[in-house]
Structures are given as C-alpha cells and as structure tokens.
Image (cartoon, rainbow, N blue to C red):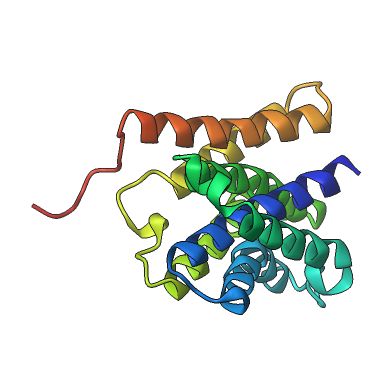
Length: 200
C-alpha cells in the first residue's frame, strides 16, 4: 500500500511538472494534458517494457489516469497560484524524480534484478518522462545538460541498497532513499554545483 501511494504521488508530481511546462509554452488544453501524461507515465512505461511487464501499469490501474487528469486540471485551474511560486516547476520535478527512483528500484528488486540494474531501472523511471516532456516542448532535456539530475537518482539508489543491509523497515528505506535524491537535487541547484563540461 505504501509503495502504491509513493507511485501515485510521483505520478501527480510529474503530471503537474509536465502541465506547467506545457502551459508555459502556451499549448492548448489537449496539448497540456498530453505533455502531462507523457511526463508522468513515460518513465514507468519504458521501465515496464524493459522488464517485460505487459500491459504497462497505467493501462491496468485507472488510478494513474485519474491522478494525471486530476493533477493536470488542478494545474490549469490554479495556474496563477502555481506560477506565483517561483520554484514550483523545479520542486515538482525534483519530488517526482525522488519518488520515481524508489519505485523503479523496487520494481527491479521484485523480479530479482542485480542491484546495479535496479539502480539503472530506477534512474530510467525517474528521468525518461522528463526527457519526453522537454523534447515535446522544444527544450534540451535537463539530463543532457551540466545539471546533476540522473546522478542524484544513482546516489539515491546506492543509499537504497546500503540501507537494505540494515535491520530497518522497507517504508523507512523508501523515504530515506527518495529524500536523498530530492536533497541532492536541491543542494546542487542552490549552490550551482554541476558536472564538469567537456567543452573548452
């Protein structure tokens, strides 16, 4: 149950993020809904296809569709208040990658994948929806820039498996691992920490 709540919360966070980007690009209502949907479901869709789970999660559980549509219309109705929050898009995106990283890790673990592959799966789950969102909105995806994005997801995955070696509950591991991703992302943006550029 806790795992499902985390998954839905991540879906809502990315749907709001996607809808906000689409509205900033002045897309119509249908365009906003599509971008919100792919941002929220894109990473999970690729993850499920990679692990051979078909149909993918959002096709068999209507809670995802309800969450995405609800979050999209919430964003449209309260767009002025959301836009007023200077960091709202960044915060929802950051919360989304933190929660989706943990969801991807757990999915990999449930089918017995190696920890390194689980971390890769968690990173894909967290990042791929944002990549599609940015491409559809004619932006260079954040993961392809200097910003520390996927690296934060990998760090959260390492923490996840380190905590698995300790006698603590799974729910607490989920929370700490997701919070690690979110905290790293907040710190690197606040202090403008980035990966080194290969260009002179």
